[in-house]
Image 1 (spheres, helix red, strand yellow):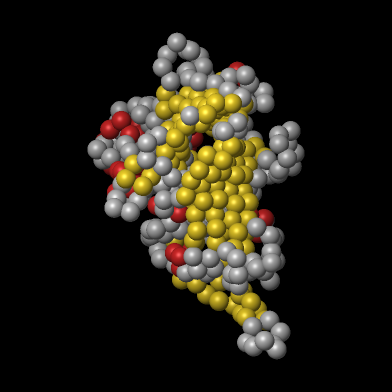
Image 2 (cartoon, helix red, strand yellow):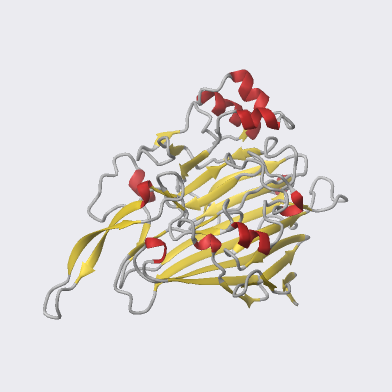
Length: 428
């Protein structure tokens, strides 16, 4: 264990989860906050926060997770708890995309561009989601403590040509750093830097878009009130990308005004979910009944609804670190806890755990049966289903502003930063 500048980094005993997979687990400690990371999926498995309103009370774990790396491995993290997802996060329509590749017929020929079509596996209805059944969130990444003083733990993964059906071999890196908040003595910032580059000698191009998929509940991951008493504010998210019946964007970018999608000035999640249910055709009385804390039968018998939408982050001004823009503020007033999410990405997927349906308690943390709306994900990303060809330049709707990054030989590497800042509401 090493301690410098009030940051403590430690590695727990490694755990063998199969004959050839050994999972490494790390803990970062600062300002009475503990964050636990594991190599399986480069996952955030625990975030212990103090109760800022009642400091004498015990800390609470504010992320949903599995009971252990072993149960996470056996279940293949089917709900993506805390993982880095990719090679391309979110959905790709019908699991298919096109990309121009450079083709050289002989040494004397000039290279030319050839349009290739790639078919991926479909693991979410007709669509491809988060890299498929064997996405990055299921892999055991290489890992190491690389900087004690800044609480840095780095995870790396090699993904070869045709992995998941994608072209080109790449190396992916995810580096977590724990730091003191700039504006709060008791607050901390968990900074995640994600990057990717082509393997040496690689001649093919590939799309790349990574996202961090933690489910947050600032009351506690096991709270019986779920996220209903949280307040969510997304001041820079004045538009979103509507979706079809399979959650694929229609390529329209629509204002959030006059709808349940509007979090620009903040909404209590219970109110937002009631309004969202009504907008989706649910009887108002049923929508209100569903948010009752213990009424699981009503929830399980109702249609699935809630938020699972990408928001455009209007990147106009910021007083934050260079290139980072405020995506969301999540607050839980009974505990005084707040979470601010800042990112370099053009979009953020708001997901309210609509598809959690009573997880088997034997495999979940503290034997919790996670139900609908138990957590909220704020996945910073490029837009879903947005692998756009270089010669497509119709940005009349604004959808192209969130296009997926493409790694090309001789081109730029991919990078994406997101900062999760935890502090008391009074100081955030």
